Image 1 (cartoon, helix red, strand yellow):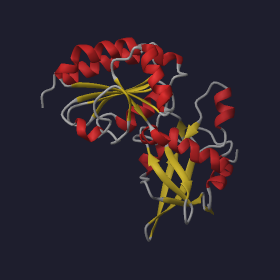
Image 2: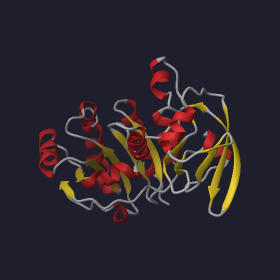
Image 3: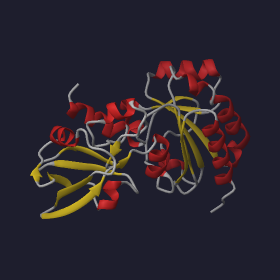
Length: 267
């Protein structure tokens, strides 16, 4: 797999750390350095596709759509070039970047910092922000798979899969929440990108009371930048994300608490 292919994959499901030393640093038990931005090949250089709040890229003033055209005074053309030029860099290293923004060229300085944990990345992406909309077919259960039509309700989303062992430990708590608070304006949705038959079989085997949606083409998974399963989010009546967590156990407890709290908010 080429570095360009890897960059494209990470920009969909994760956050691109902008360093060629990710694997080596992680193997040493240290968090790799990053800028906190997603990237892809652009027309003039390396285009920024995402900027995580509070990261070096954000503090430097980078915006989505910017293209990095020079690094430390030397021209930069592709993501491959960027990976190669950042190979071996460490947290605390300073970069001088020239960014093309429309017809302007802007000089920026950025200092690499340790990469955030996935949970914190998820929270910075979504907490207190409007939830990305989706319209997905129902594989099992009843109701709507269109998030916009659920406005005014509290929506709990779990990204799941038939092969996900930890997901199985979440179904009891989410099912109980669904049965207990459905009449109060709660909707629990499981979202999986497998076949309809597989998702129906999962719902039957686990006796799921909540609705399962089929994420055709994994479009919702991409919109929510899901990097691991289960990933659970709670969306309030106004369509704003109030909780986002990765994993089973405590994250499920936090999701239930957040849903109960959002149900009590009658705005």
